Image 1 (spheres, rainbow, N blue to C red):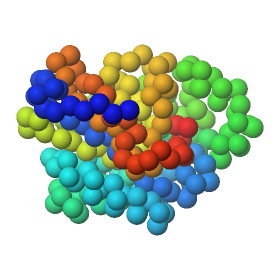
Image 2 (cartoon, one colour):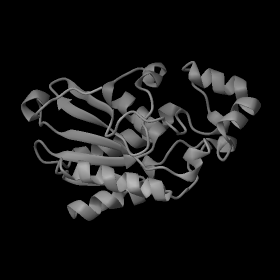
Image 3 (cartoon, one colour):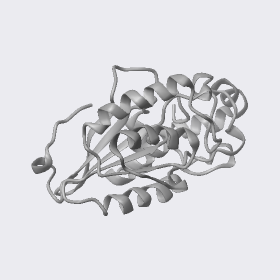
Length: 222
């Protein structure tokens, strides 16, 4: 989903927020729920981050903020190396805490917690594994993004390096969507990103899951 827009089209101060998902981890490949578990990037994930960083550097970002979990911080470091920007790490951008679901494979979750999983997919407020509600994730992550966006110069660009579930809830909150509709945004493939632009009536989704030819979405929000 791509919609071109320059600073004049965006209105307001013309700020832009790029929400960038981390590179591949071994748990992504195994379809294992990561949540707040601190899993490293694979070699493939590092390569994805380097490739994506070259593309994002061409957008001349003004600031980078990232989740402090290693898979996100390592991804953001690739962009920092190209741009010379420092990465501000913030635990508010971590992935959804999912209690007993964390470490389980997709099949194991469905086998053990099928009713809970089904309710979540129907858009009901569910504490997956006894963890956070999606609205609680948005409550902690969206203010971090907005706080850093408020520091941008006119027409400035912020890169937020985070996690699939956290990015989706943050986008939903910033667009003013009702939580039961956040699922309609779909997931992000590893090291792909979404772009929000500032319009006259608030934030608008300009691009979603951009950065590559279509690839499977392997993540906690799948």
